[in-house]
Length: 98
Image (cartoon, rainbow, N blue to C red; front, top):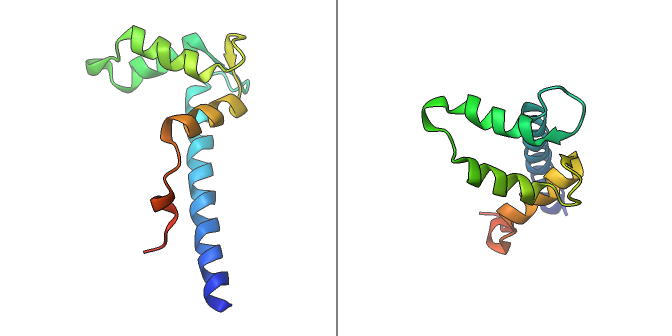
Protein backbone atom coordinates (compact mmCIF):
# COMPACT_ATOMS: atom_id res chain seq x y z
CA UNK A 1 0.00 0.00 0.00
CA UNK A 2 2.85 2.39 0.80
CA UNK A 3 4.29 1.76 -2.67
CA UNK A 4 1.00 2.70 -4.29
CA UNK A 5 0.82 5.91 -2.28
CA UNK A 6 4.43 6.78 -3.16
CA UNK A 7 3.85 6.12 -6.87
CA UNK A 8 0.64 8.17 -6.77
CA UNK A 9 2.48 11.09 -5.20
CA UNK A 10 5.23 10.92 -7.83
CA UNK A 11 2.66 10.85 -10.62
CA UNK A 12 0.79 13.75 -9.07
CA UNK A 13 3.98 15.80 -8.89
CA UNK A 14 4.76 15.01 -12.54
CA UNK A 15 1.22 15.94 -13.57
CA UNK A 16 1.42 19.19 -11.62
CA UNK A 17 4.76 20.08 -13.22
CA UNK A 18 3.40 19.33 -16.69
CA UNK A 19 0.27 21.39 -16.10
CA UNK A 20 2.35 24.31 -14.81
CA UNK A 21 4.48 24.16 -17.96
CA UNK A 22 1.35 24.28 -20.11
CA UNK A 23 0.02 27.27 -18.15
CA UNK A 24 3.37 29.04 -18.57
CA UNK A 25 3.37 28.35 -22.32
CA UNK A 26 -0.16 29.75 -22.66
CA UNK A 27 0.77 32.83 -20.62
CA UNK A 28 3.89 33.32 -22.75
CA UNK A 29 1.79 33.37 -25.92
CA UNK A 30 -0.95 35.54 -24.37
CA UNK A 31 0.95 38.82 -24.70
CA UNK A 32 -1.87 41.08 -23.50
CA UNK A 33 -2.94 38.77 -20.66
CA UNK A 34 -6.63 38.66 -21.57
CA UNK A 35 -6.82 34.86 -21.40
CA UNK A 36 -7.28 34.44 -25.14
CA UNK A 37 -4.69 33.89 -27.84
CA UNK A 38 -5.23 35.86 -31.00
CA UNK A 39 -3.63 34.96 -34.28
CA UNK A 40 -1.43 38.07 -34.22
CA UNK A 41 -0.09 37.23 -30.72
CA UNK A 42 0.87 33.73 -31.77
CA UNK A 43 2.50 34.83 -35.03
CA UNK A 44 4.45 37.64 -33.33
CA UNK A 45 5.58 35.34 -30.53
CA UNK A 46 6.93 32.71 -32.89
CA UNK A 47 8.79 35.44 -34.77
CA UNK A 48 10.22 36.83 -31.50
CA UNK A 49 11.35 33.45 -30.19
CA UNK A 50 13.61 32.67 -33.11
CA UNK A 51 14.08 35.78 -35.26
CA UNK A 52 16.84 34.13 -37.29
CA UNK A 53 14.76 31.01 -37.88
CA UNK A 54 11.23 32.24 -38.38
CA UNK A 55 8.63 29.55 -38.71
CA UNK A 56 7.07 29.65 -42.16
CA UNK A 57 3.84 31.61 -41.86
CA UNK A 58 1.74 28.84 -43.43
CA UNK A 59 2.94 26.39 -40.77
CA UNK A 60 2.20 28.89 -37.99
CA UNK A 61 -1.27 29.48 -39.44
CA UNK A 62 -1.97 25.74 -39.63
CA UNK A 63 -0.98 25.33 -35.98
CA UNK A 64 -3.19 28.27 -35.02
CA UNK A 65 -6.16 26.74 -36.85
CA UNK A 66 -5.58 23.52 -34.92
CA UNK A 67 -5.60 25.49 -31.66
CA UNK A 68 -8.84 27.33 -32.46
CA UNK A 69 -11.25 24.44 -32.00
CA UNK A 70 -14.45 26.50 -32.11
CA UNK A 71 -13.17 28.67 -35.01
CA UNK A 72 -14.02 31.99 -33.32
CA UNK A 73 -10.61 33.55 -34.00
CA UNK A 74 -9.52 33.31 -30.37
CA UNK A 75 -7.95 30.43 -28.45
CA UNK A 76 -8.86 30.03 -24.81
CA UNK A 77 -6.91 27.88 -22.37
CA UNK A 78 -9.24 24.89 -22.78
CA UNK A 79 -8.74 24.88 -26.56
CA UNK A 80 -4.99 25.26 -26.06
CA UNK A 81 -4.93 22.31 -23.66
CA UNK A 82 -7.00 20.11 -25.99
CA UNK A 83 -4.77 20.93 -28.96
CA UNK A 84 -1.61 20.10 -27.00
CA UNK A 85 -3.16 16.83 -25.88
CA UNK A 86 -3.95 15.98 -29.50
CA UNK A 87 -0.46 16.95 -30.71
CA UNK A 88 1.38 15.09 -27.98
CA UNK A 89 -0.99 12.17 -27.67
CA UNK A 90 -0.86 9.57 -24.99
CA UNK A 91 1.44 6.58 -25.08
CA UNK A 92 0.66 3.85 -22.58
CA UNK A 93 4.39 3.08 -22.30
CA UNK A 94 4.94 6.59 -20.92
CA UNK A 95 2.65 5.77 -18.03
CA UNK A 96 4.73 2.83 -16.84
CA UNK A 97 7.08 3.42 -13.93
CA UNK A 98 10.71 2.46 -14.52
